[in-house]
Length: 163
Image 1 (spheres, rainbow, N blue to C red):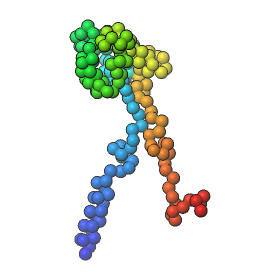
Image 2 (spheres, helix red, strand yellow):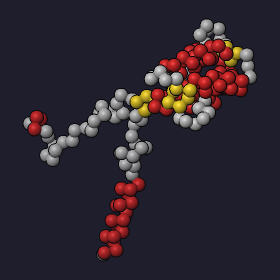
Image 3 (tube, rainbow, N blue to C red):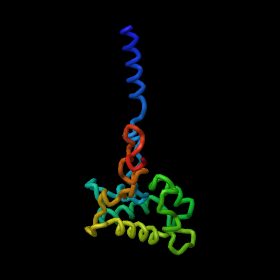
């Protein structure tokens, strides 16, 4: 009998341990997001000090454009670049955001202008660097309860105001 109880207890503990905890990272909703250009700016951080300077931005833009090997980026070439550099062509920034004159091709000037503008926007403290904390955005409410724990009903099922 004692062995049977021990077996049932072990199965119960195993079953509880196999269920994901509501507080585990896999179950929590995301609390921060990063954009596609954040991935590009991180790749430009050549000295690995966890921030990208204006000089690193300029060198990174030169290297990125040279690697593309084109005078202008057609929609197909842009989509291929976005897949590699941004992780997904639907991640953004999008092709039409780069193509400021809407002629279908992205020039080096358009490419640099958009990414330089995004760099300036992200440099929140205007120190000439985009640090990792400037590359992520905190979501206003990471939980369905507005960032606070849900109210729990006391034993008996009703709050005093419900009665």
